[in-house]
Figure (spheres, rainbow, N blue to C red):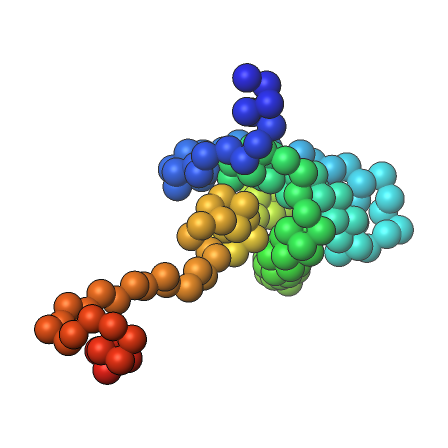
Length: 175
C-alpha cells in the first residue's frame, strides 16, 4: 500500500488545489512578510528592496516544494524546471509587492508598520491569485495530468467495404 502512495497522485480539483495553495502559499507568504519586516528592522542599512528579494527567494523555494508535494497533487519533489518557472512567477509577484510598497512610501512620508504590512499583504494576495493560475495551468500542469498535456497521434484504422474481388490485385484497387 505504501508503494502505491509513492507513485503519481490523482489530479486535484480546482477548489481543493486553491484551498491548499492558500494554506501553503499563504502561510509561507505571511511568514515571509514578518521576515521582511523583522530583517528590515534588524538591518536598517540594507535597502528594503534587497531584504524583500532575499526573503522572496527563500520563500519561493519553500513554497514551490510545498506546492509540488501537496497543493497540486504531484506527490514528490519539485523539478528544476518547476523551480525555474515558479521563480518567474515569483519575480512578477516581487515586482508587484515592491511597487506597491514604493508607491506607499511616495504617498506617505513615514508609513507605519501596520500600513506597510497591509499594503504588502494586499499586493501579495493579488499577485498570489495570478500565481495560482500560472502554477496550476503551466508549472504543475504536466505533473497533474500527463495525459492531458502530451499530444498523442491518433491511431486510426479505416475499414473499407467494397465489392472488389478478393486477391492482391483487387486489394490494391480498393486501397
